[in-house]
Image 1 (cartoon, helix red, strand yellow):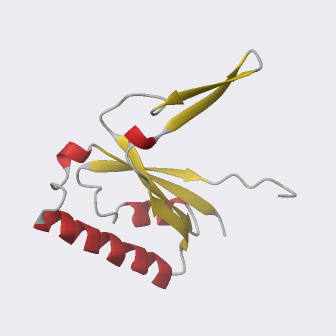
Image 2 (image 1 turned 45 degrees about the horizontal axis):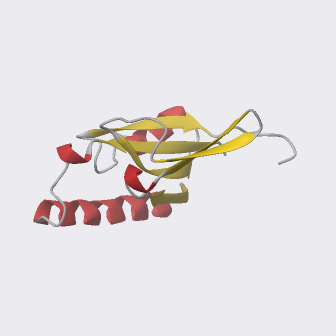
Length: 119
């Protein structure tokens, strides 16, 4: 079955305040959403990511490794986490993405996982 990566983007300032009852309710919604993916047999993997301030970017330039603190690009919206799911087709993957708890103030990029022969 095809796999899709759901990349979760949001501007944290648009969501519930950390530690608020609304934030706690959203965390519960994430647990419910994840369990729903598992119950549907769609869940492959998924994790939340730490804030961009914890990121380190690596590049190679002229044979030298260049390491930079922080994300590659500065934006208001962050990549906050991901899911890898199995879905029959793109429409099915989009249905799963539309139920993600923060889709009301963020967005989800849905991208097919490339199938590489022999890997």
